[in-house]
Image 1: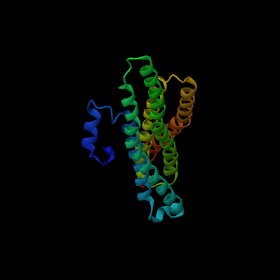
Image 2: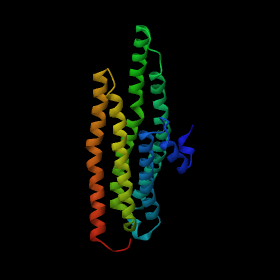
Image 3: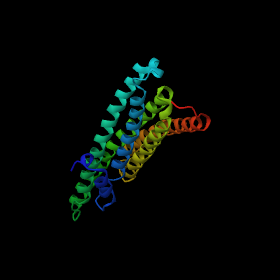
Image 4: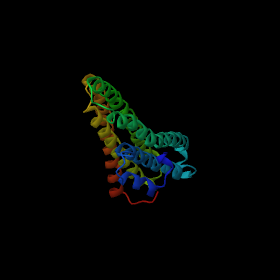
Length: 215
């Protein structure tokens, strides 16, 4: 089932159901896609306006990057669900004999590592999206600054949300060295992305409180 093709109402209903997918990873990917879409909207509101003639080329490039990120994050909604399916099947494997138990453990371990792939990709794309919002704040239409703020908040939340889906899987991995490598990668992305998102939001908030002119 392609969750991205479903309506907002259908997707929310699927999240609220007892089905294991979509879950927090897919919701994070969608939040990131919505956040970067707001950045793209800021670009659309900036392009073609004489007031911003000196940044048109830069903003056009930013818009193209935002469009690619948006599509990538939407694709990760589905990828996250598909990445969980092998894990769900692995947990259902028989464990009556020692051989079955060993095989189940092997398959579960591989599935746990595989289930981290989509959340890590979501985190990487959200970090890139957060940097785009910094640029949109600097170059975008002043009147759309609140959209930059909302967009970066969504991307920051998506970054943190996706990290939880990494850590819940690594927590169960027997290969602690492999788990540690995945955890360090997630922690590094949080370390760079979370302060960056907070800085952009703070700048937006300060601008809104300090400026009243129409953009």
